[in-house]
Length: 262
Image (cartoon, rainbow, N blue to C red; front, side):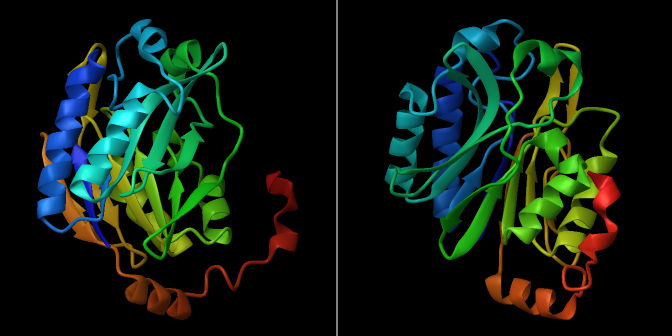
């Protein structure tokens, strides 16, 4: 499945403008043969927008979700994107996957909140593994800091995730996560990992870009620079199956020795 990674910060503070950016990117991705487009963390609204996060938060089935479903249908590709989700009095840092037919397939709430900014504005989610079936692949969702906890990604591996989507807002000086951690996570868990970042300065944060799609061999299939880009790379189920057959990590585990981890 050809996968498009939208490295962009859009227009922080404007859901309307970001829907336009997403629509334009979806058109370019579909024209290039992509079946899936992945946008960064909180792409719908922007990240460093303070209390506007609560003002712009929407339910998972809100107006913006409907608009993105229409975009997905019109261009014929699935879309995953980050947004602030309102559920009752709580606001979650969420990522949603919508099919090419406009069906909401999965909604994930970030479980590990990073720093005071996120803890001040969001409620942490409590479900580590959220998955959906897409074009014969088992696709999992995670957000930014979540992927830096190896237990999190291993849980996805044990649940059979083939492609892990990670909308992110990775900032300076943590670029080593994109450069080194993501390929290692893909290799040690035998999956593809799509890590899609924001770019540029937003408030006190300097987002480093470097979005990548890493394969189960630990090799980046594509990697962005520091500016806005639309990247394309292929997720190959046959290669994944062969890599899993050759790599014994999951088969050689000894869970009985790991009780102290929890």
